Image (cartoon, rainbow over the protein chains, first blue to last red):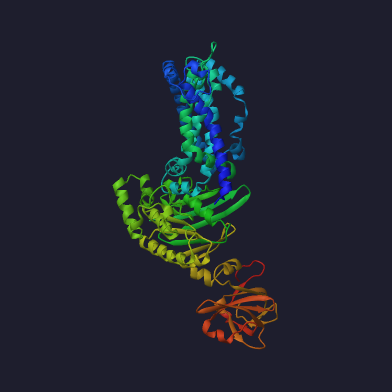
Length: 270
Length: 349
């Protein structure tokens, strides 16, 4: 039990952190309901809310962009979950690729995306898939799949090998044993990995900006589009930002605990 | 019906040989225990029979069919692991019924049979629980239930009792034996505990450094150990080894004490004596000094110092009144009870 003064200090600390975190969110939320005139006064807290910004972004294709983002993130994370769980298991149980793979799997993350984006763009042009979602999905896989795999290794480490062996003796193939017995042991981790991978893809702007600049623009690219030659359309942009942020906030709420577990599991156990 | 035959089976990892050229027969319905110190290759042998470990050379036959390169699922075996390997996400009933999911058994049939087996193992009231809500002994019985539901040709046990406390271990041991005798399924059991091996097996295979040191019934192995290793590994307390020389019909120990022995060649010799064969008589001029007396209930283990050599004897508690710590005793044994070994080869002579 913490003593009373320590509790007070902790309370003040948490409250400060909360204000720092929530302030931009509150500001953006307010801004999304303001008219251009009201936006000139950033300190304005009480005003007659207007839905103009929301009407504008809904007509302006933000929902379609959000749909494309969700599609890209969904496909990326689906492929990552299937390939990543299988990869993580062989790395964990069979030491496939040795220690180098286990820790080197994230090596590509060190490279700036700018290094990788041009090969993707070139291939997209060669296969005539530029400005479509296909190269973007591959680009997103290049960072979501390793992260999902790495994240899951720690979870698989805590599954005893004898479970798979038992299932194989009980009459199942290696793959069935993995599917029916090993995989269910890491469902909580897999769930967290899926949400985590989804947000990684959902939040990406750089690859989207270069690979899907116009007709297939994903949400972050569409949001950037509010920075026009006439200036920043702050109200509409705020509304669009909220569309982008809300799913992530909800997702983080669900995975925060598993996220810590997965990261420490992957880092400590070996 | 289930027979297992190993023909020239070997296992090595790189240059390290774990199992050396093993020829073993496991006849139908027998209970064979592979026993030996850790690292002797007994678990590896079991895993090669199960198909969980590929052999480096040789052939594994189950029911006269060559299964050397078959998957575990195609060998019709059941295995109980040391940690039971119960499926944590399934209930007791689902765990027992699980092997039937690999067969074409209908879901209702599978549940019915699992329920019957659970009842017969005294788990009837626990079928809806998850493994982590069970005690060690109950988990053990679930693992056995899962092993018997498929009516396999062969049961494999990999030290299944070592996670239980001493009392439960003895209880489960006899339960296991009853189940095996009732079903008559060929069983191969691995343990490092020689006492477990003695009580469970029809045949015991004592292993050392990847080789069979001796094979026989527990009584044979106990009464006629073929080497110093087997003699000292099997039996508790351990057999005492006395080093000395044989001349005519007299054995002269390093300490100078001598005893009559009616067989064996002249020259250097090791004489092995079971604790129950060593007789101690209090005598002020005796060659031994009592170092320790451990009372075990009806009997006591008496450790005697024979000028530097430690000798262990088991004495009926009733005779203890004559023996005192630090008291001097005369040590004797009947000549035909002595086990003679060659001191260089350490083999029986």
